[in-house]
Length: 124
Image 1 (tube, rainbow, N blue to C red):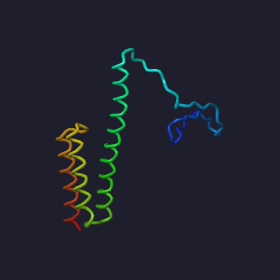
Image 2: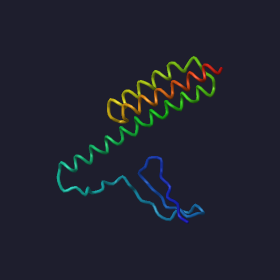
Image 3: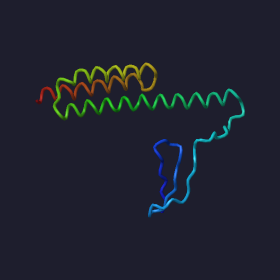
Image 4: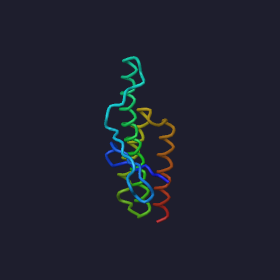
């Protein structure tokens, strides 16, 4: 069975056999011709790639901040929760304003995280 392994720089992919022997390597850093026939379509493709990169970075930032809060709740760090939550709420509001997520989704996430924080504070 063959496995595809991505390098860290995402410019090379290697096809390796089960034993680890390299069978095939392809480089992805060359420019791939676009399927678009119109210049504005090519520009749209470039714009979409930039937006996808920015959106995924912002989504990752949201998830990371949520994980930090959950870890602080689990570890019982009450002092840091207020600052972490305010930063999380700010990130959610920015994501809702830029249509990364729906505004009601952001409100729901803020509400549920606040409930978790208050439960932890009341329980401990």
